[in-house]
Amino acid sequence: MPTQAYAVVLAAGSGSRFGGGKLVAPFRGKPLVTHAALAVAEAIGRGLLAGGVAVLPERDAQLAWHLDLAGLRPIENPEAGTGLASSLRCGLAAIEDLPDAGAALIVLADQPFLRVEVIEALVAAWRKQGRSARPRYAARPDAPGHPVLLDRGLWHLARELTGDHGLGALLASRPEAMTTVDVSGANPDVDTRGDLSQLEGQDG
Image (cartoon, rainbow, N blue to C red):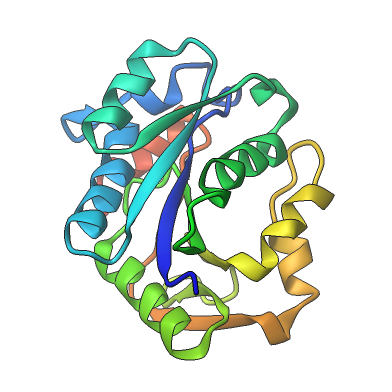
């Protein structure tokens, strides 16, 4: 029976609203992508996750290098330009053949405040209840939280997605399959250079 959770880090977006180069833009002395990647790496080191992959655009050696350093296996998505859905399918396909893979932690690479204790809480909820889990952050209780720990039984939903759509709407229509885990703080993402500047002055 599959009992392990693996990370799927989505890092193939073009960052068009940012003006390009978003994930390697400097944030607090490190490339933006490094912050989420190191949180995942710590979770792997602590045994919360059994491993992970990172979905990248084709031939992005710089991004691949940063994620490989964090112990994530780079997976190129030749259809990255079509949007988030293709990257999600690509990442799940990369771990689908692992016999012990029972859940995928779907991580957005542009969320630098990702915390290991949130990952730990999601994995604990999944192991206890056998359902997918997502966080509800105290600072934004009305917003769907990330990352999402997706039970293997729901991976097939990714095949229904197109374009830049994630799993949000499909998961919302299946509340019985999802556990909400209350956690402190927030986990904002970065869309624009203004977002990045604003986060510089926040705790995280």
